[in-house]
Length: 255
Image (cartoon, rainbow, N blue to C red; front, side, top):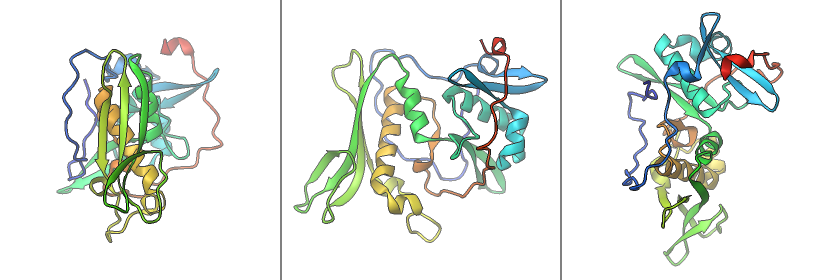
């Protein structure tokens, strides 16, 4: 069974490990590659469904349209395709729902599949025991007290300190709760200042991180990354495929 690739430099998000609930939850775990990936004309492929249309995602198409994919070894490519298939993520959308992020340590490059926060949460919500979610931001008020506030609105004299999320599981008395300190995950550029998205929309970013980390614990999702979790975001070039038509597939291959 392939495990998600992990970067070798210090980019792991620090997160306390919650004790797993006693009951057994269905797991969205990676399956053996050939159960969700198919070999067509000798190359690995998977299919994304858009209504009554299918898009075939092939290894050669990824090599053609994703610059970083050209640099990956066969095992890294298969892991990327596997992760994309598990999440039903489109690497050719704008912005991409999944992309490979390179990390270099001691001259060795590894790749971490990065999933969009929306796609990650959507996948978790497919679990039959998922029973709802609440989330918001943690605010330090003018009097120094903290408020776990729903949504992302806070005053000019208040300080954004973090994000929080509760995931409700059928049959469990209490929801799975996760709070995240913004200083631990804030994306900064090489000069130490927040990157564009964190500078402009910090409340949105930190709530996404809290949602993802709570979902990861509650639904036991496959370990991967969302862009908002990474300490440094590199600008990865992605080819414009907005005008690309879906490639017809033989649906019998994907049953």
